[in-house]
Length: 470
Image (cartoon, rainbow, N blue to C red; front, top):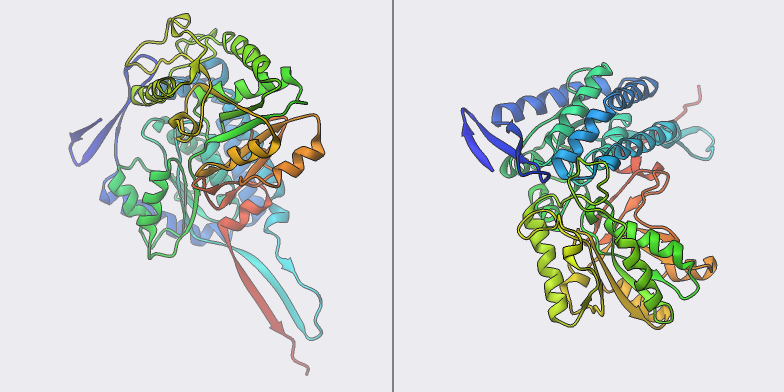
């Protein structure tokens, strides 16, 4: 919702917890944007010459500062996007893990590449910063998704402008506060609240050298269109329809608990959440019984209550989209195993939606092809590894995939056949900062984290020196 207020457009953030207006935030105007870009470019000329050890210190201090506000931040996350308060502080634990890891490996990752000796010459390749990096972050994991790019970008010598989701504006303010408390010089890290047209304008600016975007496929297309002809580097983490395959030899108890958690945590609003489950026919019925029992251990309610383990969706339109997917599947022959009345907080035309377990699903149903981004466990029976792999690959997305089995060697062989960025065995819905985070097909392009993550935020500069004989 927007209102006119002086020279700015004012955006109101509505809490899914109780439909209240949580934040009223003026959006940046043209003057704000121009000044921010100028500050970033001026600051970058000094920041790139700042020793890496000093950059590391600033980043470490910022993470320290952010963690001192953990309880307040957890409450804000719950209010802004609906995650149960008992889990909200865990996001900052993930932020610390990722940031500390990237800080710990940056000396090696950013060190010049030394070449074999060649008589009479010195040759090496340096990792040069790109300039100003524009980070566009989503609401579902508002700190984790942002920190994936912010910390390595700053370590590499870039300046950063953050545009956070209108659903989670306080996250941008808390990150700014943390860097300010760390003493980071002005202009190196900034945030702007932007509408769509101004976001596109910033993407197209010649003063931006790299754009990293996490969000929908349609949003990724907008980024590519806005950046066309400007030769920016672009990193896109987009949609997912991540599958799990439970083989006949799987540890069934472990598989059920893991995939149900992977489907329902954060109300299913995870880029790499489990959205499709393929179960071997020989254990399918037992799996369904155990999955239903597991789902009934969840409690849907206000995210501000400590007993709640399943909060509301981010907004009513998202919940209604999922209701439509479920209804279409049932009309096409799927069986729903969860009685919505058993979750009294679930009410029509609200963000509060009961979890659902569907069987008898097929790839003719939207729930198995469209990104759901909600608390649905959709199970399809399969009769062989070959069938499972074919169905897992039958998607426009390719972020992660999981196989549950006691035969690790066989799992790895099957994993080689999957068109995804990350392959899991006996786990899911997790991001290890030591591994490159990447997707294929409509799940995006580029990669973040790990040593490779620094490559997307730098450019190679070759030094070729010939030594003259006197």
